[in-house]
Image (cartoon, rainbow, N blue to C red; front, top):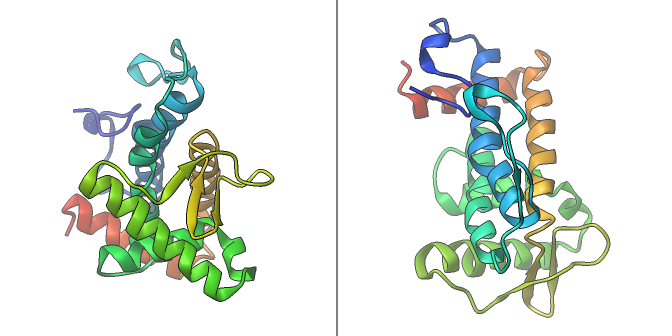
Length: 199
């Protein structure tokens, strides 16, 4: 059984070491979610068969912006849970947004709170529960940012968001592989074990 885009369960030695758990998490999030969203939005090279990194060329899909957001938005909640927010979708989502976008710590606290709340309520919940949202615009936020809060509306770039999340995932992986980050590793492993049914 394939448990990531490149590994089958029979290839692993059990019990898993924490480094293996980190790599499985990384490969699942990258290969089954974020790289797919990036391909849909921007085109590129798909991962190949049998765990090969290089596959075939894929063209971007026009008018796929909201589908890309659907693929990407659960990443925030996942990061919130895997870094220690124990319960509740909203709390985990908010914690994940702050972790993925650390610059929010330097923003006006009231505007940052409004942005995060709108991202959760209007974008995440709007798309998940209603398949649409009236309070989000697709576009090009200033600079290289994948997201902005303008005039009470969230503006998102479906082309930039997957790339920003892939960059965050790589950084998160490196943080987890550092044995000095004991508390982060413990939180991650506890959530990984819970989700995988490992006792």
